[in-house]
Image 1: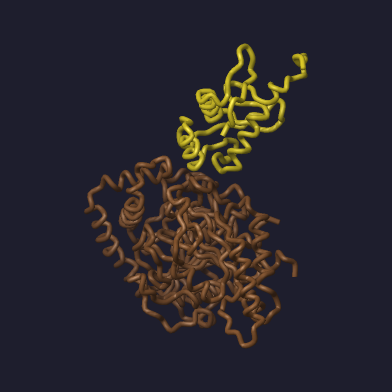
Image 2: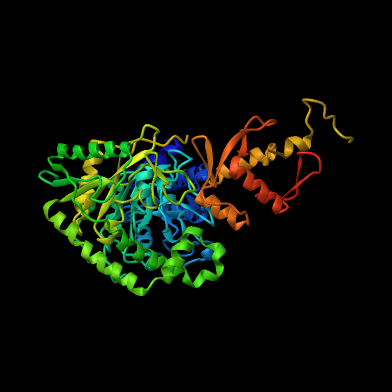
Length: 469
Length: 120
């Protein structure tokens, strides 16, 4: 097999081939490391642990050769870790020069669990400072580029992860999501991303956006994400908000029926004002596909008020608290982020508490809605990937828009903690990927994954590769 | 080596390397500067304009360049390189800053510029 083909295999296929001794984990790791080097211009990885990965691959190969060895479900499969997630002995910068030499002494739970399942860590992927924007650039490593169009951002804040997965630089990536940071880059880079229920995969240490922040899988196929869920979901005593264990096999659950499911599609949720017409057309058409599975699909306007004023102080409050001790080193903090920190530190603490009250009050809207519907579909974003280097999209469909107007659909489900995914559902005429968001009931990760898998089976995307050579 | 001929059509090496053109940087250095800004994601092309990105604004102001966010420039086909260098308000502001910082220096009575330090 050509080495590049190893880079495009799914984790499920890799794990099966490795355990049957069809391919060697050493070849897999070498192939992906070579491709990472070849595509350095994407700036997807900021730290590559080539020696460690090769060593782990050789050990994985020895284990395969041992008679009667018990292999983990991801034995020999490479994965990447966003640089906001701590890794034992491997530099973790949080995307800021303030932490450029920071080397943690333990692994975050998700990293620990992937390693225990036999997966091999290749390195760390780029992120904006503490994940503060939905694009990926920072003062330490510069900008990450979108494999589908190098002039565009791969989204963020897990943009190093989405660029890596979409470019064939490791089939599994750990991303984090405090306002859309798994779903945004998955949508912009044409891959699958799942923000599981809050607490489904434990986090440690808490992220800057702790009560909003989820950790989850970013992959090319839904099955690969389900494999990661099988390995990573479940409580960890370090995370007091982690959910109790659920006796679910997420891979097996993908096969269940969707017949009779009540599905709603909304392109505004009641408050989103502007939507790119190509995104609107592709996502509305994707919603209709669910009829093929026996779902009852309705296009609705739930008429919700915008929860932005509840989300923003909670998100900004966490990052401001984290960076407040470093305000003496202003030149090391992004200008737009400094404005947010300064503004947040000036505000009364009751602003933050009020945001929490507003958050809890706002939940009553989706609560009532999900009594009637099993699944909500929306465009993941209001526009396709914008230009690289920008913090936010500055215009949609040719009209100037305020900051954050391009991502009205993702952050509400950080406030509610509901499971939500983004599936690729088409391309713009200029070749940029478009994503459809699927939102499930509280704790119903299974329906989100199953519906994502059904859509993938009906409209597969993983064979489409970005024009990188 | 003596001074090079500057008859019509023959430009000096200095002229080709760096010069001012309507108060922005032109010549090989100007073309390379624009390529470098694009490669770093500090400037992006928006239709006919070149626009300073948030990242570009951040990195350049950090280096002491006084630039407004989202400042725009235009492409201007370079006389000796036959490719775009950066003109317009962003081009002018960059040249002003490069001169103010002593990275470039003007020569008396010619458009040629002296590159004293690395431009970025």
